[in-house]
Length: 496
Image 1 (tube, rainbow, N blue to C red):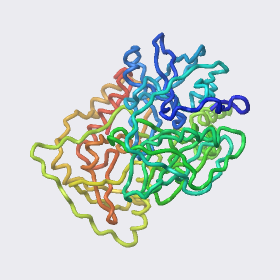
Image 2: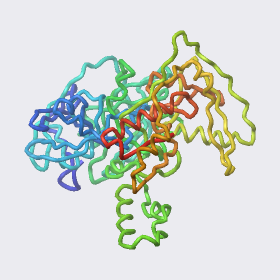
Image 3: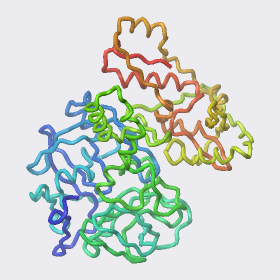
Image 4: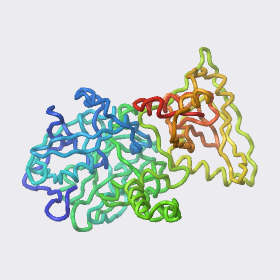
């Protein structure tokens, strides 16, 4: 938040902070329309409400995005896409690429990426935000507080200077031992006492352990001590609201406490590193892997230009076969037949020698968000590994029993003869071969329990489309048609 030195957030002690203080709202404009900006230092990327994009008449400018937004409550938040908008806060204008979401109440949610552009500094005591040096007043949006519990620091911790970090909190009283979902309300005196900002985010606890996201925006390390009050946790009235507060997270790294079943988040990272999550750490390694220097038939000047492009868009390249994107504008749905009967197929015995390979496959699928724990489902399909021609293994789902209860999708698939007829006068052809194409399209939340399976006594379900499901090919074709709908139909073709 801001540059080093004078652009740091300042906390005034001359005026006590209102204990009902909750969300910071700054007023501004977009395309001559007055809007509210919710400042959320717990989010690394900025969002715009889908309804606003339609109101200002720019819905046709929404384009697909490769970014993944994950809530702290273990859920991937679907995005409509992304759009570039010019916004005004105070007297200053900035153009920025926003993710388009249905899950925010205000017109805009401002994350750290746009806060840096406006060099924002927060003065809580005087209730103003410094925007490129100008003082802009903000208002707070209080929220009615139901029964809540105090959250204290579990153990001593040092938060490095200019760092965003997750730390372990604990309930002030003994909890019932069950998983707990709620909203973190920061302790109002913590910024004044410790120069630490605890972000008001939705969190998911395991027994008495609570993940807390905090920011140290000073130039010195800050030491927090065991049992220090960090804030309060309010119970969630509705689990569907778990996506209201979102955060872009890395797909690798380790969480602060390995026994908590949460998204894999980095232990600590600077604000700049947080915004750059998802990119190759060593971009030269990516260049080496693509073997650009061995393209001797390409002039050197073009090879260097290609390297620059690859480095700039390194976030578009997968780091491994599980590092997959997910379509933000489309989700598949499984429609059951009338009078369907839930199908439970017993799991197959797994040969001892391939169990380690299946264990690793399950771990990678779960850490990448393709599968997730299933609390209850009356359905079960069996999973197993088959050997490929190169000696490696392929993960297989036997979905035949499920297919018998699902309506056949009659979306017409393209025929190779029609494709040849359309391309007969074409002189230059380019082809793209999809890898793990089905698993890059998400399943609707209501359909996921139908794909449940059991492994080692653990119930899991798919968050993405699966190979072998009867409607996957039609859903994939429909998704591609939507993706390329603005490109003249004679310029492209899809074949499965």
